[in-house]
Length: 247
Image (cartoon, rainbow, N blue to C red; front, side):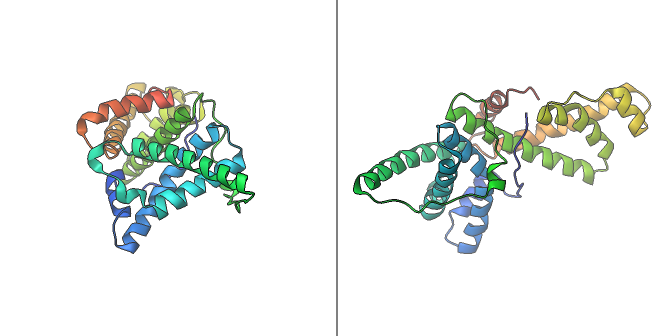
């Protein structure tokens, strides 16, 4: 499983969304930019899986970002008490695609055309064609992959700051790289030799230390996308199902 790139941010999801809906233009612009960078892969994955071409999916992704997230200020209408932001985003995207289809049908009948937008090939290449059976599955996979990628970045930075670089190396070789790139886990014997450790149990304990940090960070990150603490466990279960990978 290869996780997509994602920019980490100091805001949690809901606080970032609230900031994007504020009247202060500078604050709103910065938060909105973070939202776009964070969520466009999930939007594009959904649209692409509906059967649209790369070109059309790119145009619709940009259209959704411009028309709904920016012009119509999706963030301003977001209500933290309504639950999960993933649901709001997906519902808004589905509504947008229906509206766009109707609009293009009207244009076609009238003989008018749109001037197409385009996203750079470098950006599009970051999302490979997935094997997921439905647009909803493709959206959920990208959503969950973004969260896991962000958590890994957080934990890696935490380990570096705490002087746990060797701990992170073990976790990366035994858990992260197999999860992200379908590599075989590095043997403990090789890690012990590389890192100058004494025995396998020491290396195993170091990996457990980082795994605990990862689980705690994942719980916090998932919690930032839901409005009720009771929803966190359900969202975590959904995330693991989305990725089809036990962590």
